[in-house]
Length: 428
Ligand SMILES: NC(=O)C1=CN([C@@H]2O[C@H](COP(=O)(O)OP(=O)(O)OC[C@H]3O[C@@H](n4cnc5c(N)ncnc54)[C@H](O)[C@@H]3O)[C@@H](O)[C@H]2O)C=CC1
Ligand SMILES: N[C@@H](CC=O)C(=O)O
Ligand code: NA
Image (tube, rainbow, N blue to C red; front, side, top):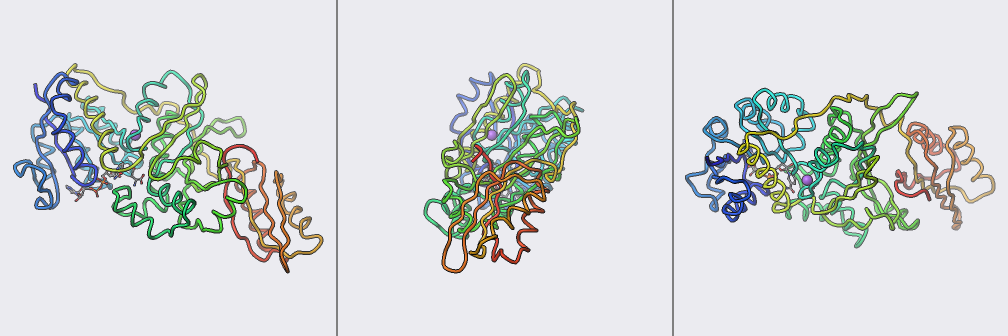
């Protein structure tokens, strides 16, 4: 039997999948135990794909999915038509490999149900952290452990931008253009800079880690558009740098176990392993009861790295077909409630311009006390007429920290709130 593969989309990732399929056909066949044949490539404009044999190109993705194929690889992106095409493929018993985190973060339930109905596979390693083997280790290798926390950098484009802003002071817009040119950014790069892409990935990670269905709408999200050079300078002054983090964690409130999932920029110590993760690289820490802390690191974006993950999944689903088995389906039995960020403990770094006169520090400190927020470190530096006051808090409910900042901003002695950013990593 030959495994016949339909490709949907042939852009940054798809072109590399087609190349690797062709270049490694003999090795792939040996590893799978059967030949793999590219049955067709659905594209929007065939003339733009001179590298793909013309007889394989089609603009009719639906017909290709309905044809005599075993596996459908989807690298179009977005919700429709990917959702309809993959639903039809899975219901028709075709295994699916997809890199589409936006789709999985919203419609995993129906896609897994379609896979279940026909006994097909749904694999999506490329959807989170590009080339890094992360989802399968979590779904399979750690299936006997209890994961408590997943934290890391899961968006290459924003990491590329923040790394450049930090190291060379490069401008935001130019760096974003460069990230798009290198094939890191989404078709609409606002999905990257506004944190939607990382939020989709966080939803997928949390769903797998906690055996609970978490969708993109459950994820608290802040992007990097508001991160300024002033924030970066404030971080540097404290030996910190700024990264866009995805954090998925078990939380307990009133004796009830729940999960909280958030994506936001955060200051981390320059000595933290995530601080050294530059460019489009991603890195994710997984903390589990028995395994302890595991770190996954590698290229999180780009055509060839992402194609590596797609090919790995293709081999896995093809092997399952050869032996007549299936990989794991959705595991959502724990069904834990999802907590809002307001109830989650975080820590803040707050940088203020204040009047340089006696009593200012105690006026500011009393607002913290009023909100039951404890201060971990204070640094005050006088200038001519005003002073710079930097405060780092201990952990407190995010809602209390926000109210504290709002009230401080209204104090007459506070001239300007220069920077407010959450802090992760070691206690200062
Ligand atoms: N570029 C990257 O570094 C990574 C991308 N991904 C995901 O992989 C997927 C593809 O991403 P890219 O290759 O970067 O995007 P891309 O925009 O370069 O490629 C998508 C291709 O699909 C084609 N397309 C759109 N609608 C179509 C339709 N109805 N039928 C056939 N073709 C259609 C487009 O013309 C385009 O060539 C997305 O889901 C993305 O989120 C995942 C990890 C990394
Ligand atoms: N746009 C994404 C691509 C990979 O998922 C990113 O920048 O990480
Ligand atoms: Na991956």
